[in-house]
Image (cartoon, rainbow, N blue to C red; front, side, top):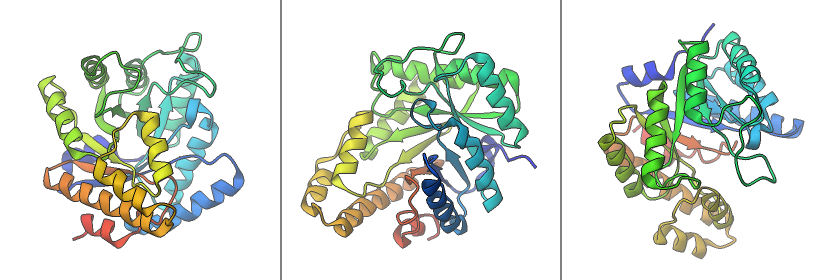
Length: 294
């Protein structure tokens, strides 16, 4: 049985979609934790979920297994992430074919980050150098696959300029990217400016905001430093006041995320994608669930 295409869900949706992102653990203990989290969250009935490919493609062998397991638990559609890192075109073709044969019909197509220990992305011999190349390759190999692509409200850290970054996004959608999921952000005004810029550049694909509920000051600072996302002074101050009080920090982070979601929904976003970091606590919080089930 094959999954529905997320592009079709977006086109026919009567309400904003809710989606979660999981990542493949590196060991069996992590896998057991992921399965427990997935089982806990399944009753919340997200409209789709995605599974990352790991830094530098390091967990690629587990991604398809996890996608298949999530479908067995009852999730669907399940979107398999795929990057250009570490694979030639022929090797990517084999992976895409396996994804297709498993009944998955959605791929998040990304260039990917440099492998651990490297700071500059270099295409593999006979590989692909850009996400738009990967999108084009996937769509030519299986025209009925739906591709999601990444957007960067505060500009990709390697981009030469905000304008060049928007041009790359437009290239990805023109190559066949059906929808966009953004990098995390904590200031909605940054997202709204990004949406206006995309519209000015003729990007018509639906753009889904991606949010990471912060659970501690350290985690929040680490994640934003990796993607160069800005921290609103009010959020930073509240997290600093929470200090090492875990419960208070989680409350601050959840409250901020809930307020972000309410504002985003009021502005008519097509959905919200939550980077849950394989944790069920935040996604199961009554305040967050109430955003989608008032």
